[in-house]
Length: 339
Ligand code: NAD
Ligand code: WQD
Image (cartoon, rainbow, N blue to C red; front, side):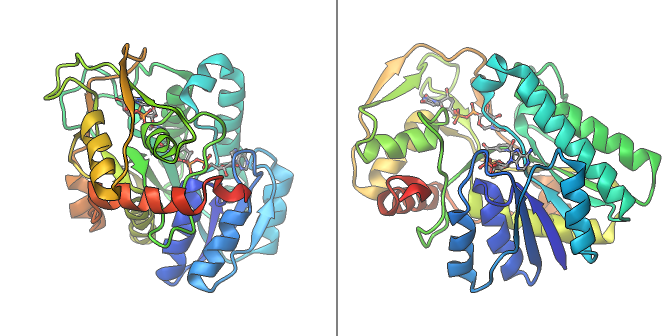
């Protein structure tokens, strides 16, 4: 099936293109390259032997979308990754985040509807869950009271898509809430290419190990967790990509709206991840303990039971795989796709 992948040149989108091709689908990527490099799609072709048709354009622009759907009348469903995702930047530039993330989703859904394509998978985030939930987080755990505009934009997009599915029973909407995506394709050809100083833990660890950063600051070691550092549910990007293929199968069999966690169900502390990275790769990651980062939770991890029972999906890669594959990518591509 032809699958339109918005944000297809990005970190998760490009890995999902590989997984779609491996499952026999034909991805088409639409991306404005505001946070990516088209080299990622050339790497998809090296890995799979299949070129991904690529359109450089903005998902907020209905005219661009009209052209895409007119040129590819047989698109069966859409995976909507395109969005801005930097939490700190969203606090500084809320309008940019609301405009891009909401307008892209609304424009996309309007044009899809006009072309009779009513199946969409949306990239949501564990950040939509309220801070006062018990762990692990289930899909029916409380949402809202987000701490930044990025999180609210995901929360609002979820609501928009739910309302669309409610208004027209021909729609099928899958909301995927990712936990902490990390890792890279095992080939070392594809991975995450953050702009500037990484705000996420894993790219900071790998850039420190490769010597690009002097040392990692661990934000707090006095949390109520086994070793005092923050606990998260890190998930290998290839597992995440496979989760989208399972969600495509689900879309084809169901209508209405469904929400799924994509996480491993296993919490991992900052120190555990640092030590796993050192052991898996035989490197040293210098670190220092710094104050807590504002807005951080002590612990956040998924209950992935629903994805297992209803999507037939389960994470397969463990912490060592995540660390090994991140390092393989980082070592082979110290400047990401810019080489
Ligand atoms: P990414 O920045 O690598 O990919 C997003 C892609 O969307 C980029 O290639 C960017 O150029 C493109 N894009 C942004 N706005 C666009 C627009 N208006 N039109 C066309 N293209 C546009 O990020 P990612 O990590 O691959 O994340 C993909 C999606 O998953 C995002 O929606 C993100 O919010 C969500 N998500 C990511 C994480 C994470 O930690 N990486 C966690 C939860 C959810
Ligand atoms: C993980 C842990 C930090 C950096 C964010 C977004 C979330 C989602 C995933 C998109 C925490 C600690 C980090 C560092 C550190 N993205 N840390 N030193 O905050 O769980 O989630 O990315 O949807 O919305 O908020 O991920 O990787 O930033 O942090 O000690 O330099 O690592 O305090 O405990 P987070 P993260």
